[in-house]
Image 1 (cartoon, rainbow, N blue to C red):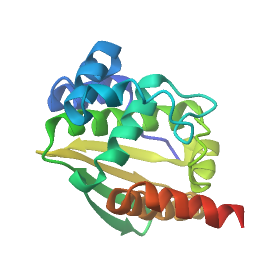
Image 2 (image 1 turned 60 degrees about the vertical axis):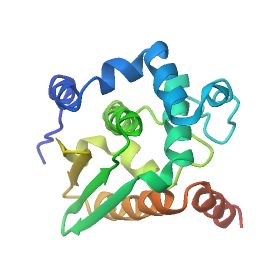
Image 3 (image 1 turned 60 degrees about the horizontal axis):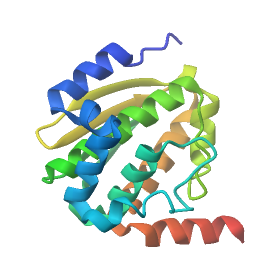
Length: 191
């Protein structure tokens, strides 16, 4: 299978269309402002101490993105379509600050998979293991929507397709129920 993945140039163009998401969020100053807008000044200083969101290989801004999405999960809407060879997801929010973090998170995770840089976050789903081990089997297309981001990921590998579909459902549950979903998933894995 020939891999077609939105590369850094195309990914940068996608993010530029969304506004200052990549540039504003990737700098700590921009991250601080966005996080302060979302949760108040007290929250930004508490992000680094979130042990379940800190991975073996995570940056402070990535932890802050996750924290903001968990804290504001009720402001996210998500649609998932299972395709015969993958998924199409649309994740959106009317909150422009949260949208910046969402787009940055999605772009960053897609790049991490391409680079095989598993962040190894404690609450991370095991379905991601398959994706981080097989980035060459993924075809990823990204499109900005008026209020978020649409991602189509497909594969010729049935194990990768199954992982994509399972993970999409898990992320939808996280968007719907926040940390409660993550805690239940961790408990199920530990039993």
